[in-house]
Length: 105
Image (cartoon, rainbow, N blue to C red):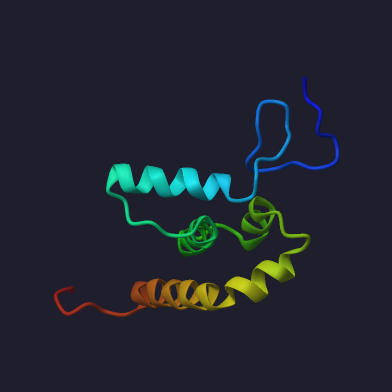
C-alpha cells in the first residue's frame, strides 16, 4: 500500500502520503488544549529536544543525525550557544574534582 517513494515524511498517513501542511499543528494544538499543556510550535519542540540532548552530553554528531541535518556543521551553527553552555557546565564539574570543598579534610 505504500505509495510514497521519494520522501520520508515525519507526518504521513498509512500509505506514506503527506498530510496537508497544517494538519499536524492542528492535531497538536487540540491535544495541548485538551491536556492542559502549553501550546508551542512543533518546530520549537524539535529545538527543545536538541537543546536538552546537548545539555545531557549527547554528542553533536548523534543530534545532527536525529535532526536530519546534512552535516554536523549545521547543528553546530544552529545550537552552538547551547553547546557553549554545556561546555561551561562540563568545565565546572571537572573543576569541582580538583578544588577543596569547605567541609572536606
